[in-house]
Structures are given as C-alpha cells and as structure tokens.
Length: 75
Image 1: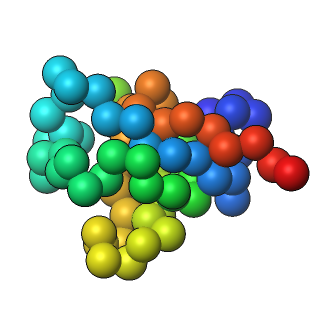
Image 2: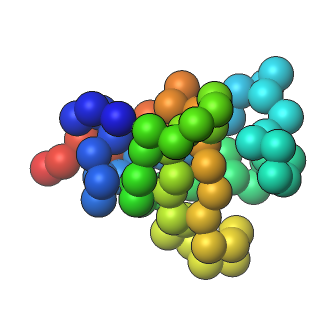
Image 3: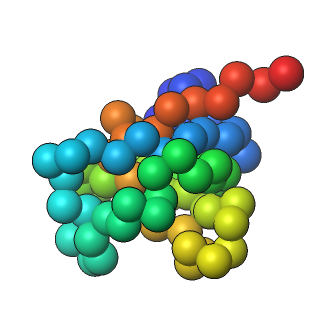
C-alpha cells in the first residue's frame, strides 16, 4: 500500500468512467468527490484499497482501485 494510502489516511474518491465497480456492487455517481478514510490495502484484485465513507449515507465503506483515490495531504 505504501505511504500514499497508509492506514488512517484520508482520500477523495475520483471514479474512473470505464470502471464498473469492484465486482461486489457497482459504483455510484454519489461517491464522486466523497472523503474516505483508508483502513487497509494490499487486498487481491484491482480494487485493493478498503476505505470507510465519511458520509454514512453512502454506506459503511467499499473497495477502491488505488487510481480511484486522490490522497488528501496532512496539514
């Protein structure tokens, strides 16, 4: 996972138009731009980073491709 997506770090969701989702459920346009907290990475498959949504209305969390996330720098 590296320093880019360290556990506990934050990121913004930047969905890829051509990506249908992680195979468990499809992506939703409501996810675009959401802030998520990284909980783990290095999982098998293309969607290898798991993150929790800051906004609970979108659900608990989901798996993302690393290139679907934009790290939020620490202040």
